[in-house]
Amino acid sequence: MTGTSPARRPRRAGLFTQVPKTLSEQLNAAGCTLQESGLYFQMYTAPDTSATGYVYRRHEWAEVVGCNADSIDLYLSGLEQKELIVVSGPAILITGYMADQSFNQPKYLKSGLWDLQRSLRTKPLLRFIIGTQLLALNTAAMVGTKADSAWQAAQSLWEEITGGELPPVRHMHGNLDEPNRTMIDSLAQMPDADLIHVELDRRKWLGVHPQLREPLQRALADFSADSSVTTFRQRRTGSQ
Image (tube, rainbow, N blue to C red; front, side):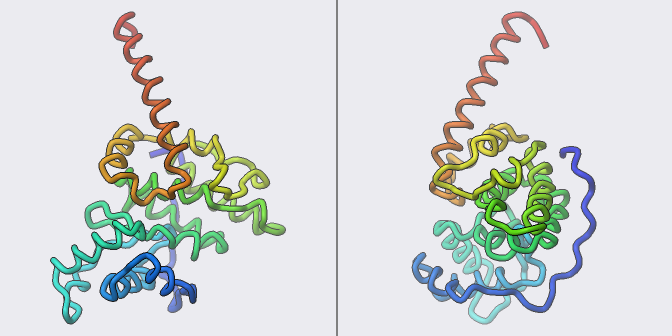
C-alpha cells in the first residue's frame, strides 16, 4: 500500500452502461464464439463491474441455461487468450472497459480507487495491467477543467499502484507508439514488480497492449539488473 488517502465507497452503478455500438464487431473480429461474447456482455454490463473494469466471478454465470462451471472456465480462458480480459483467481479485469467507460468520466474513474485499495490490494498483476491502461489516457486533448479532473482522478489510481506521480496534464498524450518513459519506469519499479515480470513472461504478456510490451520488458529487465547489482554489492560489503 502507498500513502494514498482511503477511498470512499463508490455509489452503486446506475441502471445503464453505454455499450459502444462497435463492441459486437470487435468481439467478432477477435474471433469470439457466441458463448464467449455472451459472457463478455454479462461482465461488461454487470452493475458490479467497477470503473477499472474489475468484476468478481459470479456463481450465477454457471447457472445460466446451457452453462456450468467447466464451460465458464472455458469461455473465460478463450476471452483471456484473445486479450479481452485478464484473470487472476476469481478476480477478472476487462481490459477495454476503463478506456471506454471511465476516461471521459473523471468522478467515475476516481471511484476505481476503492477496488485498488480493497478487492485488488493483493492482485499485483491486475494492478499492473490497470497501470498500463492509464498510459492511454490523453488529458492533453481534453478541454477546460475536465483535463484537470481526469488527471486528478487518474493520479489517485496511479499513486495507489506505483506510489509515484503522473506527468503534467499537458504532457499526457496517450500515445502508445511513444509511451511516457517516466510512467514506464514507475510501473517497472512498483511493488512486486519482480513477481509481476515472472507472471507476465509465463502468460506471454497477454493483456498488455502490444505496443507497450517491449518498453516495459526493457524497463523491468533494467531495474531488475540494477537491483541484482545493488544486492550483490551489499553482500560483498556487508551493508544492509
